[in-house]
Image (cartoon, rainbow, N blue to C red; front, side, top):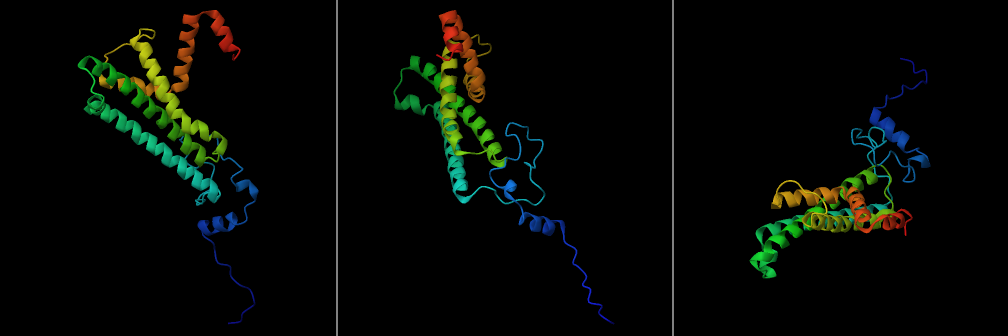
Length: 217
């Protein structure tokens, strides 16, 4: 059989074709090119990637910082669960040697605080993995990610106090499950809860305070 010098090319698989194309990508595929809106829904699991594009686009330094933030969020998550559990079994009441009349009030506010932190960190984790996956993670947002669970805990505690003071109408029982549910929802939707506190402040302190708040003073 005579060889005419022609060579038959090997047919590439989709994976090999993609890997070969990935090696020639320009700077548009680097960390500086976000892939999709971090606030978009999770129905699309691609995050703007092509099939078989599995490597991280973050440099090693950013990857280490992302891992550290993830560890922090997990520590806060399990700390909030521990706070709720320790309150339920009475660890804090025995440590502080509270009187029977104080135990119910202490437990209720501890539930508000612990569940508020849990709701805040649940929201933070959801937003964290979205921004990381879609290329919007950056260092300047770190303070928000670190502080938002504490803000959520504070807001849940104060909203609970307002409910007990009848400044906010509350329906249903005052059981532990109800307090945990309210605290979690307030912590998860802390921005909306702050808006409710704004409305209450304008009612209590009058239109002059509303004008100052609107002007950002």
